[in-house]
Image 1 (cartoon, rainbow, N blue to C red):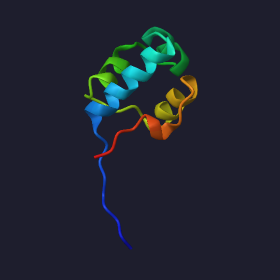
Image 2 (cartoon, helix red, strand yellow; image 1 turned 180 degrees about the vertical axis):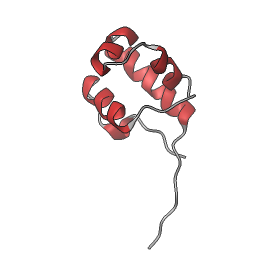
Image 3 (cartoon, one colour; image 1 turned 90 degrees about the vertical axis):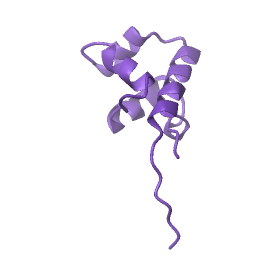
Length: 76
């Protein structure tokens, strides 16, 4: 079996999340409400590349902005 381990590029994934949110015309505050987050601070941590959204939040982001989950995540 040929297998090459990949890692998720946090910085580029964060940039992609930022770009997709902006393109969808949803505000960070609206996304916070949709995802039931306590504050938009965590969204800023995602877009800065400091953290990645949970799998559940990634799926919900994809549904909210109408994209495939695979189009959000950037692999190395």
